[in-house]
Image (cartoon, rainbow, N blue to C red):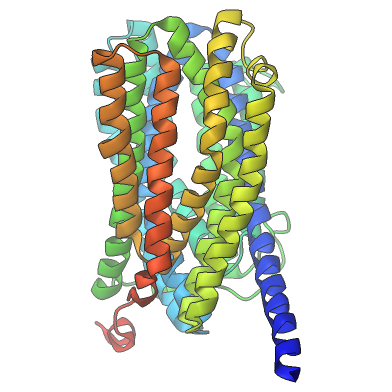
Length: 477
């Protein structure tokens, strides 16, 4: 009888401990996403005051550049998984070595992306067929911003290393500083304030470049100096995560493992962005009002993604660390409880979409025709919020475990085998309207949620091997 009285208390305490860890890791990631959303809104608003030409130049260049950035930045997914597994095993040397190799790979990717943007910038705007003035401004913009890839990609990989170690606050602090630099720099350099010249589009690019450079140096400081607070640069208040010698040489087995983990994550990012672009072209055929309504719905729905992202980050970190510690059942429990919280929060947001869609969409436009269509679409989008929360967290858990291939397969199945063909049939053959597109999107997320839940429940991800043999790591020439 005594055992049966103690066991529920033990389970309750274990769940409370897991919940505390999840929330502690999730809230900085959620706030970090809020900051990214804020700076995107500020950038768009400031550049938009320069006119349609400037907005088109920055919009096209930014779309292409950021798509490439997030594909290359997938190296951070592999680094997070490897560092989390080593951290859970209390292998500080292994975590440092894996992080150092990931950072070295990030620098290499940064060089490739910076060179690539400089070369292809003119072709991007020629293919778009913009006017000469817009093309010239756009080429300057993407080439200047592209220089920042030299430090922005290491920043993203470094953030992944910090998260893998269980630190989500430092990436938030760094994002706070860099986005502040970007916002103030935009105001000063676009419009010529605080004694600076008015540089227009070029000023927006320089502000972004300055933010990326500052963020890259702050990340390196946090990794190699152990200072977890970039607002206090001149003293040391922590243990360094990385050792300089771990970035001074290339270890082929570790690099191969990083690329094997990061490749599917990069492909997943490419597939998602590719599906968005193709879908945008198909929706454009429905007319200007429908396209504008879709943009408003997407912008409104993006408000709900932040909690799911935060819980996905927390779940991925804790799953990787628990697997490294050999606590397989606890890793499973982390995934389920993170999924529960994400579904609850996003379901609450979905309820708001269902009840007050007109009020939300009016915040983005005054065009009543657009508001009317967008409100219907947002009410439909309310039905997919729980499925998005489930999918994001479980796929994040799989990535944290190193099972990035399954996450890729789930995304590919939903976007390219369900959503894209059905939208093409709905628009071009059946001649349906925009709400039908959002209904198909709900089906896509439902399919992904079922696939993710079934695979996570099967538990095969717990046996994924993500590190080369330790002797190879430390003794390879």
